[in-house]
Figure 1 (spheres, rainbow, N blue to C red):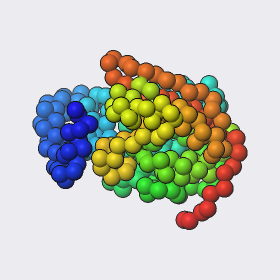
Figure 2: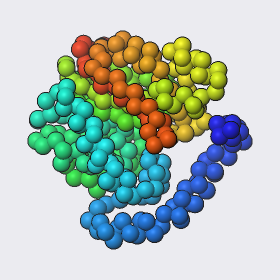
Figure 3: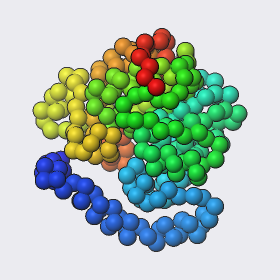
Length: 275
């Protein structure tokens, strides 16, 4: 029902208007929570409300303290596979730094980078978050980093908003900027998210076929893509990575959670440079 409603609203050209109305409604509902957060945390800089709404939701405690927990969670997984001392780390698709702002306090003596295709997020991070370097990328590759540059790359719910074509292009690009034996932490929509698919889409998903809901432009949070295990495994291997871990997290607190893929670069894949 919800999926059908979204499609109908999209066809009528009203989705952007509906999103704006929903944002103002949620912003009004959370106005006192924001005042309380600022009063209790006067030194913490918050992104504009719409940035939070677009990327995570208007929950200020979850944005800041939940972002810290997520950063710790990511690097607790990564440290099993790579030495995290004096590393170069990239948050690909960093948004308004929900996770990125905490990384310098988790990994000492390392160089921390972020990258995002939204210029407003990049500008906000650059002006407000110390000890990181954030660069703008486009929806399609390339990143403005040298070959074989990063030891660690993490990407939380970025592939979940990209087309199949962009999956292949970005995986090649992540290979290009990764050092040999670099480790990547990536989340995708796996089996736990199948309930969001139509019966025919579920059949295709079970066959290992990529599924997408293109209600808005690619990259937007309302553009959703779903990655079966077979698809993402083949995507990784064909682009010079080996699979270290695939963790299906299932349903948690009644909500589907994204799969975790931890992969390691084992070979270079030739990418044509354009920058």
